[in-house]
Amino acid sequence: MSNKPEHTEEPAESPAGAVKTAKPKKTALREYTEAFLIAILLALLIRTFIIQAFKIPTGSMEPTLLVGDHLLVSKFSYGIHIPNEILFTSIQLFPDYHFFTRVPERGDIVVFKYPEDPSKDFIKRVVGLPGETIQIIQQRVYINDKLLKEPYAYHSKPPSLDSGKRDNMPPLRIPEDSIFVMGDNRENSHDSRFWGALKVSKLRGKAQWIYWSWDSPNSGVRTDRLGDSVYR
Image 1: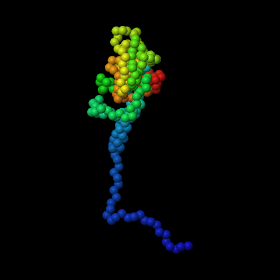
Image 2: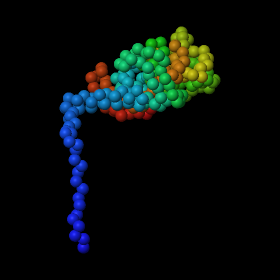
Image 3: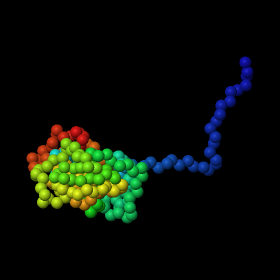
Image 4: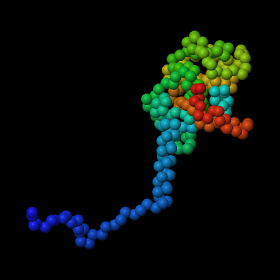
């Protein structure tokens, strides 16, 4: 058995005159401020690229969507859209960027920038797709000369020859970069029949679910609509 003394390592000594300083602790105010800023950043990222809430202000989509319905809209359903607007305003500095753009399917309910006033968001249903020819005869929609079945369409008035494009529209070929959208409440909707085809680049997202619904005339919540899909 060895009689050599055991050696243990001693911690290295600090150079003469060196002084260790502790890192200053964050103040409660700083921690709260950082948490708030991170939360705001995450909210903006989610709102821009993933999902956004919208409110239905008019009856153009009745009875599918009612005034007071609040929707969650998927922002990535038709590709990645990077808006170039000043935050919390509708002032656009230059055109938006779009990547991996996808065309909606017929029947999709979409939110888009109103072509005649981009500061406003509209919501309508996709009826015609790029390259198709659409025509309306006595309120009935024809796609490439074939009658389109529309169980969602609601008519509050009978067909009229004096209604202009509302009930009768001559054949229109939809451009390859556009779609044709209409409100389900056909006699109470300002849509592609009046201002033309909608460019796919104007889309903001696809409506998915109703997360809240407020019945203003009766001052109550429509509990039977909460959590419903807009395609039920």
